Image 1 (spheres, rainbow, N blue to C red):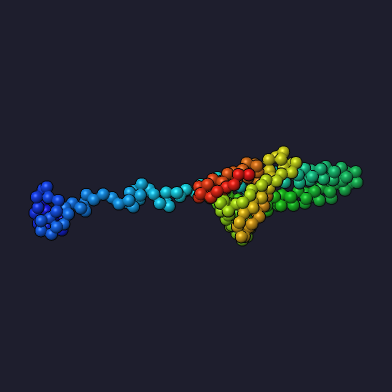
Image 2: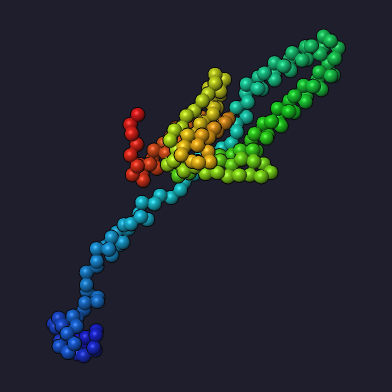
Length: 206
């Protein structure tokens, strides 16, 4: 066996080199430091990181305009009756076609104008057709999530979700025309609570 420091030959049972006094085998046999043990165990900030996962994505639902569709249907029936009785059916039909085309255009605009995406860490809302702006709200910054539904909206499971947060750009954000609004609002609230608990922030019991 040779000394790692000076290279002189030493006895196999020797602990120190007789020439330079170097402790034999100190480099290879030394125990790991506490920091090395901590790193090997996967400690540190990285161990608490959670991968971002998509929970939901959606846009404005056609069912959110169901009240408008019903009203337009009544107007159409009434218009046809009036047109037949007055002899102005072609004129009335032309007007009704314009009304339905306008409603279809409004629905298309609302669906293309906004889109939403929820992950376990952030809520994304995009707005605009020609120029699209993407904003993000950290779910940990959400203070309250509420769902508002009218009578007809409750029948079809759509509604408006209101997010109150500490975000400076959108302290109060209304998310209109969402399918399964109650379930999505609950999903947002659950994501908010889980992220706060994960980061060790206390949530007061209501």
